[in-house]
Length: 381
Ligand SMILES: NC(=O)c1ccc[n+]([C@@H]2O[C@H](COP(=O)([O-])OP(=O)(O)OC[C@H]3O[C@@H](n4cnc5c(N)ncnc54)[C@H](O)[C@@H]3O)[C@@H](O)[C@H]2O)c1
Image (tube, rainbow, N blue to C red; front, side):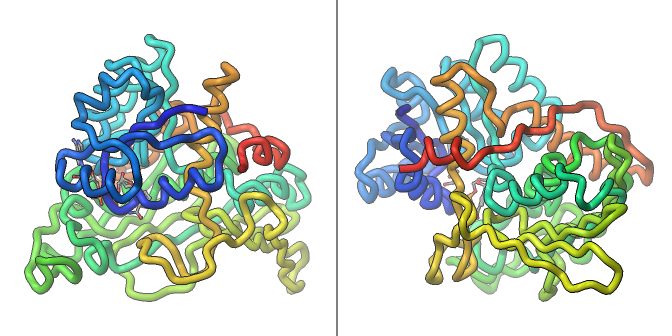
């Protein structure tokens, strides 16, 4: 069991606090925010301490700090945490710049500190069963595939959407981590990327919160299309966009030499996984409801922005698995090398679009080892 301090008391905090109900080795004790009024309110509602960032970082009772500030602050905050001698678990992305993330990984290694990073959704029932099926080779070799993540943008529900539309924001930084991490888990590290980015309008309207009806600036592309080649030679086409009202496909389709697989939404933990083995044959559904991190655990509409009324959401497994790794002196699955490689794919996608060129990855990483149900059971309450 480790005491966890949190920096950043925004939207996603509630989901992390809930993870204490599922996992037996995380104990949130303190929270902080540049907005101390928010930190105090959060602390009193959740029976934890409110501290300034400096107080939290010098608190000897805190072992691990969860960085859930906005992406543009991840580097500065994670660096401070490491310099205070504490382990970091950061929300995605590791940083908004590859070079900064590389520096973070170096500092963590030099100081024997763990650097863990979201997303952890690939550890869910859907991600793990997909991995099992692909590893079994029953679909042959995966050669091609595609995915779409698209929605109208966070201005529809988030009261402060500006950072998603400024340098360091955008659809690939925001949602790329889920899809690229899932693909690396299934196919291994990426080799190169080609890409195209488009900005359709210079202003957007606030649709939630006190600024509703007013407009804010859009500084960066809001839709990207790309083609990503992996070291295993598969080529995957991707589309990530803040410009689509409706579609029916937040999933990944991968095509092998002997069959096809539909990998469920990489932003969530559940299933089903769907496969088809013969031309014109029925699609076969593989439920993950009997898997410890696949079972539907959200049964009613919640206020959480990232949850459908019925879903599997076990965010926090990455943090719990890292705490277990610290205690047993082993490497965690949601580790800095994986997050750095995913950020490399993200940054390379944006560079490739800007320069109309193919960009080679600077980094690589190990394919994470599959997470066995018995390992998960040890972490569950
Ligand atoms: N909202 C979601 O559904 C969701 C889901 C998964 C992951 N995430 C990730 O979680 C992170 C946080 O997202 P969110 O939606 O909670 O954002 P948010 O804007 O609601 O909250 C971020 C909080 O961080 C604080 N903050 C910013 N800079 C800071 C600094 N330097 N020091 C201390 N506090 C600082 C802000 O005051 C704010 O309260 C992001 O990296 C995002 O990508 C969000």
